[in-house]
Length: 220
Image (cartoon, rainbow, N blue to C red; front, side, top):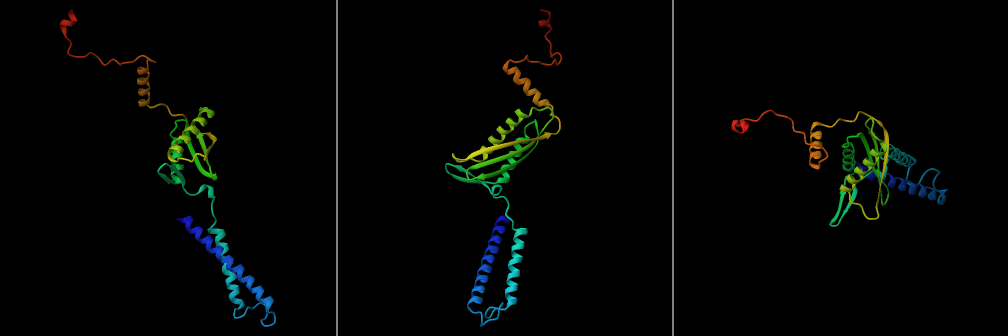
């Protein structure tokens, strides 16, 4: 909505500039064709004050356009189009950025991620990710892992055309925080997986004798 209002304002200023240029041209043509009948600096039935006010208004509109109606980077604005067999869907760029940031920060080795999504070319999508890693993490492996996660998350939201290209630029900006230790639930799941695959012996803690105990079986 805000961008639409800015676009409308820019069009109004462009129309005013065109009108001012046309009136200026008509003024000089009239002065050239009728130099004797009308004093210099005055059009027939048009006072110099009116022209001055109009010129001042046009200058003020151009100044406001430079201050308030500047257009942002077009390649970082607007939704992205996801193509499908039964039609297309407009996906908000803010939703894509939020989803990519959440997917990146879901990795245990990543502390923080900043993401920008732009389309510098007509058939090119560029994802720029800047991240902070936790202490002691191998950067090359983590960068590749982060690239894969971002690509899968993006393609899960936006289906590109066959000719389109998706590029991902990863920038490592430093270390922040320590690597989180595995939670007890995660340790338990890993132990169960090891038991199921036979990679480690199953450990069953002693919970004490079970009652009742059959005395006849114990004697025999």
